[in-house]
Length: 145
Image (cartoon, rainbow, N blue to C red; front, side, top):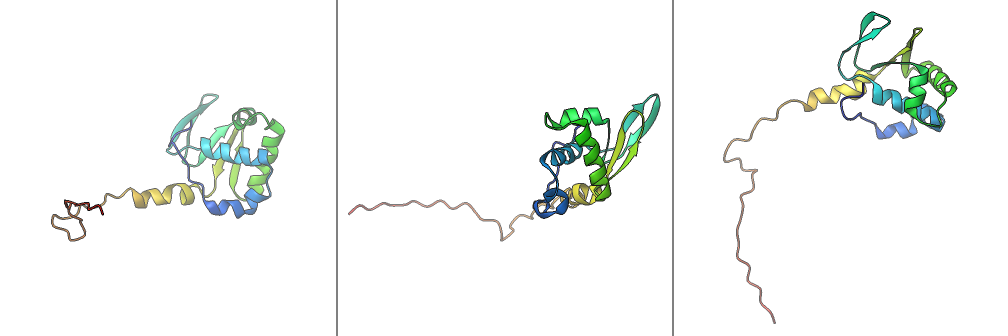
């Protein structure tokens, strides 16, 4: 399910209480969810019921999330981290028998908005633009004394 090749992490996150007051395994859960979140709408099937996962969402079981997060992350750590980050407003949860739909609350704001600005095509410079630097060839004469 991982796609998009990268996610944005803001340096100010290092001072955010969500990050600072979390244990290492909790941070691993947080980062794993961010890495697994959809970038584009995806069709998903659970027990014959099809639904669409939106950007910033991931549908996963606590067992799979614990496995993806690493050896020091148990299912109990995942359950507690899911509740913790929900209480802090980082994401919302919808639980089912087969897994949990996690919706990262500010996904659009932090992951997609800048892409809209930077995806615009930059107009080409007209020929003869004075800001272009022409190539200058000079012969340099070295004098030894």
